Each structure stands twice: as structure tokens, then as C-alpha cells.
Image 1: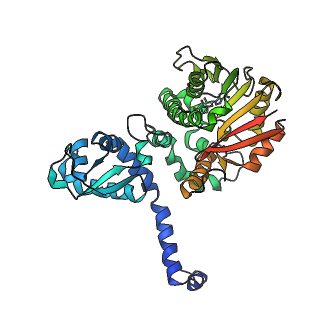
Image 2: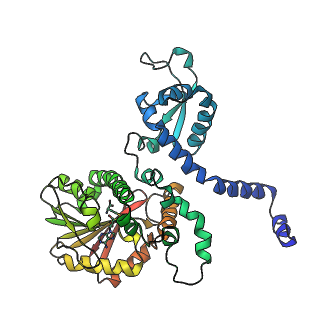
Image 3: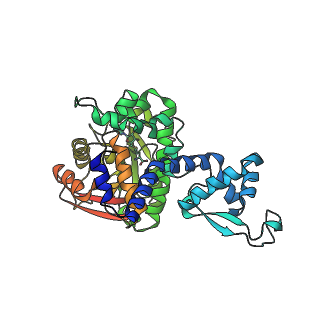
Length: 375
Ligand SMILES: C[S@@+](CC[C@H](N)C(=O)[O-])C[C@H]1O[C@@H](n2cnc3c(N)ncnc32)[C@H](O)[C@@H]1O
């Protein structure tokens, strides 16, 4: 340690020093949170807890998921870590006539599902998990091991971190060449969108779509959002527009219309254009190009024309560490493809530059918001 550093440390009291040390270790070990969660999902722990009536001892869990008894102490440690981070909770085993385990477990610690792990029950885990469960981990977090190398590249023309890792600029370019990746990407979007639209349409978010006559879901993937809207509001004529490689695989049940195309060149006309998790994938300049195409596709504000964006508005939403960290870490993730999670002033700038006159941010989707943008 050089002298200047020991001098800096001398200025701190013991409590601050130890707290700082714990914080650094906590950050260093945080990747293990995702990996522990990934492991628990692949082992089927949330679903097993659900099958066991919502709670189980570690022994009951081990039995249910079919692990060798020698793994019991390790499973206990995995469950403890995921409980401290809020994925599971603990309680004491109570007597119940329908107990799956024998009565000797009464009073033992049982693990129970929390709102977070309830989202992971079943074979269609929540949105974020679908990224973690990606069968090609090298297309996910692994590329971030090269982040420092990417920062140090000084030619200004090297492109995105994604390009450095995969040789192509964006996930959509990779999806063109890799059909398994294409399917996983699109299915992950369906999982997220089905969940988010369900919540949105249940609450005040539904008002955003009420009264519309038509809507085009731009970059709409397999059409999960449009489908949810068409089911909730049968009078809204819904169209999904996406790249050819996506549209040609989209399951078509006749409720919505599918159109293949490039949103930088054309957006099919409708009263409203929906952009769900699209603009955060692009730079400001590209967003302006996309929004200008959307503006051409919709009528005036008096005729009900609007763009509806579902995305993060950094700084909006519940005031919790989980939400705040999810927003800025998501931004770091999007940085790998030159996308951005934007603060309100950054959204305003691109709306005005694209020729829109007004907007309204509704922070009603947890870490995400619905933003209405008016011509
Ligand atoms: C993150 S996904 C979001 C999908 C969908 N909106 C959702 O939330 O489920 C972004 C989508 O944009 C599509 N996309 C990318 N470039 C596009 C382009 N030039 N024109 C149309 N769609 C495009 C991708 O194929 C992908 O389906």
C-alpha cells in the first residue's frame, strides 16, 4: 500500500472502514446473487415450494427436487443466501393435518415463497430470469467481463461491447444468424410482456388504451402486448410490426395482424403507436428517427393520435433501492448495445427533437413507466 493510500485510510474511523470493506466485498460477491438465483430456478426450487403448499424444510425440498442427501447442507446454504437477499423467506413449521412431511419437522425452519419467488414458479419464469436462463450465457452477462477492455479501446470506431463480444452490433443482427438465440430472445420478450401487460391492463395503465380504434405495436416481437390489448379491448384493431426474422416465426391466432418491416423506414398507420422496450435499445439519434416514423403513422392529438412508450424513466417509480438499482443496472446492461435507460430530461429532449409537443410519464409499472407522447 503506498503512503497516500494509508493516509486516506487513516482519515476514516474504524466503523466507516469496516462498513466500506463490507460494501466492497458485497459488490464483489453480487454476481453470486444472480448465479444462485439461476441455479435455484434450474433446480426448480420455486416450483417445488409451490407444489409443497408454499413452504418446506430443506430436507423436504431436497427430496422434492430429487437431489442426493449429501447435498443437504449445501442446499441449506443456497437457501440461506437467497433468503437474506429476499428471494425466499423463512418461518417455523406449524402443524397441519395436510402436512407433506412427518410431524417431527414441527418447529423447524421452513422456506417460503416471497412475491419475488412467486414470479419464478412454473416453467415460464419472470422477465429478468429469462435473460439469466438464456441457453447462451456468453450473450448475456459474460460479455461484461470485457467491459474494462472495451472502455480502454481508443479508436472510437470499435462499436459496442456486444460487437466486441460477438462480432455483430446488436442482438437483432445475431438473431438473424442464430435461430436458437432468435427464439430465446423473442420468447423472453413474450414472458416479460405478458407479465407487464397483465399488470398494466389491470390497473390505471389500461386507461391509456381505452377508446383507441387502432394501435400498431412497433418492434412488437411475437405480439404479446398487442394480443393482450386486443383481448382487453376488442374494438382496438391491433397490428404488430417487427423484423422479418421475428414475424415469420410469430404464432398467429388471428386476433392481431402481423407486418414485417423496418421501423426506421416505415411504421404502419394507426391511431396510436406502442413502443414497448424498444427505444432503450437505441441511441438518441436512432430514437429520433424511430419516433419521427411513428409521428408520420399517427393522426393529430385532436384525433386521438399518440405514441405509448413502456420503458424505464430513471428516477421515476417507487423509492426503493431495488427499483433504483434495477433502473441503473438495466442501463448498464443496455450500454452493451449502445442503448440507454433515460431520465425524464433525456426523454423530453428526444420527444421535442422528433417533433412531439407534450408528454406524460406515469410511473405505474414498478421500475418501468408508461409514457404517453402527443403530436
Ligand atoms: C427488446 S425487444 C421488445 C419486443 C416487444 N416490444 C416486447 O416488449 O415484448 C425489441 C424488438 O425490436 C425489434 N426490432 C429491432 N430492430 C427493428 C427494426 N429495425 N424494425 C422493427 N423492429 C425491430 C426486435 O426484433 C425486437 O423484437
